[in-house]
Image (cartoon, rainbow, N blue to C red; front, top):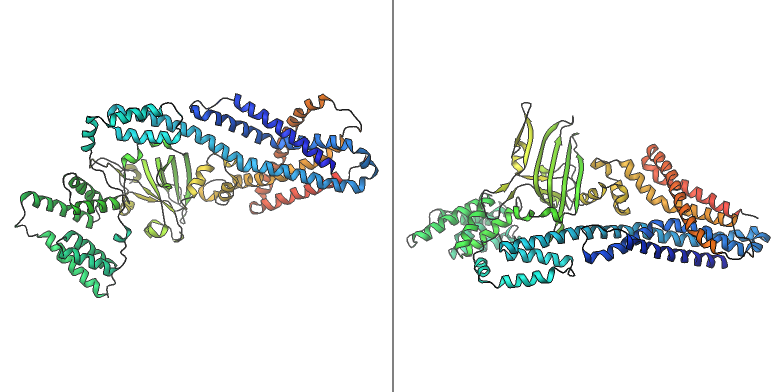
Length: 613
C-alpha cells in the first residue's frame, strides 16, 4: 500500500532527525560533578538516548498525523470515489504502523530507559567509589600499609583502568613492596581469622560410623582433642537405640578425662601451659562460647604451629561468623552503598508491628546480594495498641539470606513457610578481629515501670543473642529499596511483584496498583491517540496536487510539541479514570480499565473508517 510506505518513510525520517537532535542536546547537557572523565562521553550519550525515549510517543502521534495528511492528499480521488470499501483497508495500514511504533515505545520506556537510568546511577556511584578508593590508597601508602593500598587500588582499577592515577600508583606500590621496611612489617603482621572453609561434614557428618572411626583413630594416635570432638558428633547424631551411640559416648568420656587429667611426666613447663590453654579454648568450643575460643586459638596461632590450634581456630572462626561479624568488614562501607533510606513495616499475627529503617545497604563483594551490610539499622516493635514494646539501633549490621528451615522456629512465625529459601537473618554484634573486648553492640530501648531505659540487651531476646530475623522473603528487601523512590522509578516487573504485596510492608496498595495499571494502559492510550491522529490526517489532508513547501518541515517540531502536551492531558484523564476505578474496586481495577480502553479503541477505529469527503 502506497500510503503505508509513505507514512513509514515519513515517521522513520522524523525519528532519525529527532534522535540526532537529542544526541546533540545530550552532549551539551551538564554532567554530574563527581563523574570520572572516562564516563563523561557515555553519560552524555545516555542522556541523549533518555531524552529521545521520552519524546518517542509524541513523535509517533505527530508523525502519523503529518504523514497521513500528506499521504491522503496524494490519494484523495480514490478515497472520494470509493470511501466505503477503501477505508477498512486503510485501517489495517494505520494499525500496522501504530503497532510498530508502539513496540518501539514499549522497548524504549520499559526496557531501555530503566537500564540507561541504572547505568547512569552506577556511573555516579562508581565515580564516588573510585575517588574514595584512590583516597584510601594514598592514605595507606602514607601509613606504610601497602597490602591495604593494593586492595583499594585493585578495586579502583576494576572501576576504570583509563584514569591517569592508576599506573603511577601501581608503580609506587611496586616500589614500596620491595623496600626492606615493608618486608619486615609483612613478616610481623598479626594472624587473622581464616575464611570459614571447614567442610560441612564436620557439622553434619556423612555417617555416624565414619565419625566414630575418626574419633577412634585420633584416640589411638594420642590426638585427644580430635577424639573427643568426633566422638561427641557421633553421639549427637546417633540414634539412642544404636549401639554406636553408647560407644561414642564412652570414647568421648575417655578422651575428655585424659584432657582434664593428662599424663604430664614428660611435659616441660611451656608444654603444660600450651596444653592447658588449648584445653581452655576447646572447652569454650564445646560450651558454644565461640568468641572466647576464637581469641584463645588466634593468640596461640601467632606463637605455635600446631595442627590442633589450626584446626580449632578454623572451627571457632566458622561458628563465630554465624552469630558475629568483624568490625573491619564495615570499614568505609558508606562509599560503597547501593541502596539508601529503606523503610517498611511488618505486621504480626497478634496485631503488633515491626518497623524497620535502614540508612544504607552495601552488598558483599564476594557473595553479592546474599550478604548485605546495613548502616544505621533501626528496629521498633509495637504492641497491638501501637505502643512501644522495644526498639534497637546499631551502627552496622550484617544481613544474610538464610533458609527458613535453618532458623530456630521460635524466631519465626507459625505462618512462615518452612520451604522459604531466603529469610533476612541480621547479625547485630560486631567484634574486632584482633583486640578482645573491642565490639559494637546494639542499643535496646524499652520501658521498665513506666521509665524508658537503654541497654545492650533486651531480656526477652537474650536467648537469641544479638541476632534478629525479619520474617519476610529476603528478595523483598530489594523490591522495597526500589519502591521507596516511588512507583514510577520501578521497573514494570518489580512494580508488578510489589503491587501485590505493598500493603504487607506498610505502603499504599492503591498507589502502586494504580501506577501498574497506568504503565500497562499507556500503550492502549497511545494506540487510541494514533488512530485519532490518522483520522485527523484525513480531516486536514493536503490538497491534491499541492506543491511541497519548506514551511511544512518547520511545522513538524511544532506538531511534536503539541502532541507532547496532548499526551500529557490524555494521561491526566486516564489517571482520573484509574484512580476512580481503583478506589471503587481495587482487585478489578486492571480488567475494568483495560475494558474501557478497548471500547475506546473500537470507537476510535469506527470514527476512522466512517470518514468521507
